[in-house]
Amino acid sequence: MSAPGHRKWLNEVRWDEQGLVPVIVQEATTGDALMFAWMNREALEKTAALGQAVFWSRSRRKLWHKGEESGHFQKVLEIRTDCDNDVILLKVEQVGGIACHTGRHSCFFQKLSGEEQWEAVEEILKDPKEIYAK
Image (cartoon, rainbow, N blue to C red; front, side, top):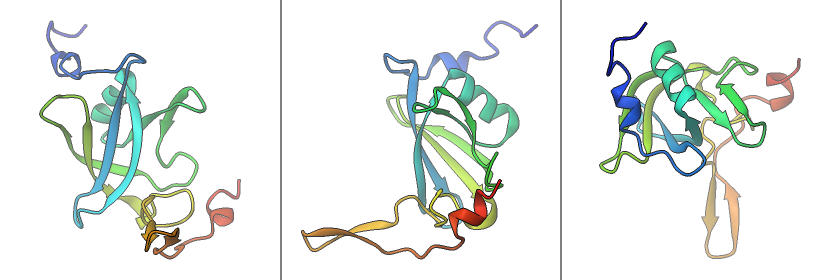
């Protein structure tokens, strides 16, 4: 049984009306923004306990341990919150160097080209068909 107040830090997070908090994932060594996701209370608690990123998948309506299918886990080095306690920042070591399901280093691989279109500016490091070949 946990001592009273053991998870006080979880109560200080400002969860939205669905019980979620937005999460920004940043590579600790480079400062690169790798991805954006959501966590519920259980996901944040598991992330802190495991030292690996666990998110809430809104589309699948279940917990999602990042890397469970791809092997591209995120080793969590720091968990931070912003001044309003309504956004979480994970500073991570990205295992395998690939954070995006497209096989790229970061999910933020598209850049607005002029004012006309989105242009992919990061190369695919590994074909997603090879990553998710199960």
